[in-house]
Amino acid sequence: MNHTNPSTSKATKGLSMLLGLVVLGSSLSAMTGCRGDRTDKPPRRFFPDMDYQPKLKPQSETEFFVDGKSNRDLVEGTIPFGTTTHDTSGLENTEWANKIVADRARMLKDDETFYFGLVAGSSNTETPQYVDRMPMPVTKELILEGQEQFNIYCSACHGYDGLGGSSGTVGRLWSIAPANLAGDQRFIDRSQDSAKDGYLFHVIREGLYTPDGQIRMPSYKHAVNQEEAWAIVAYLRVLQAAQNVDPSTVDQSLLGEQPAQPATESANDGGEG
Ligand code: HEC
Image (cartoon, rainbow, N blue to C red; front, side, top):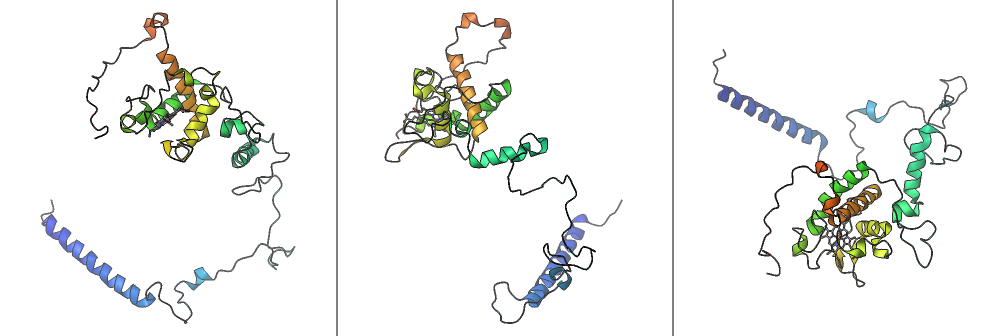
């Protein structure tokens, strides 16, 4: 067992470290002066071998290699790494190039449906058309992803159930009542534009504004990418189905224990006050 008083030895150690730092700091500042000071003298170089290193520049000549080129020729089959020209002509069926091809498509956003929810070829016309159905298969993973994103970004206003009105904690204080996404036919009946997958996607990405630019609902472009926005649309369909299901058709054995309903608040604390 060591019997020195631990607190005293800690304090001494701390003090000497502090002293060391002060000495180091003042000598460094004496050596270097203050950054931002103007001077006509050439800069001091403390590590000249780092500032001036022997190196071969790409297009320069060298005696080191017999062919005199400082650039080495690429080994056959070399794969571009990092930045590329994104010229993918002829590479479409090459596995390693798939990512580059996808990156390029993402940059150009040339898939009107995936990026904008529009029918292909309609974005530059007088009447852009929203697609009825999302451009990817609806899988369980997609729905679960949508549920997570909806619960994070939308439930605060539209409620976890999507019923809007006062069902979201922020929504009930919002100056405009959030729409009922789960029960209103405007968002269910696909014969109406406002119920098309493409339109719901568009609202998520762009938000809603009055003609004079007043915000009705914020855009979530900064938070959810295209894939996630489509996932939210898929989950909205689940919330809608849940509101319209005939309980007698549900296989009871599939239902788990039902959570107790939380007591509904009677007073609107906040509101216009
Ligand atoms: C800050 C509150 C708020 C959040 C968060 C929010 N909304 Fe909204 N949303 C609103 C309000 C308010 C309206 C109704 C606007 C109106 O009627 O003018 C609305 C309307 C909508 C509409 C109907 C559009 C229409 O044409 O009437 C859809 C669809 C929608 N929201 C989807 C979503 C989704 C999906 C999310 C999550 C990404 C989300 N909202 C997040 C407040 C919000």
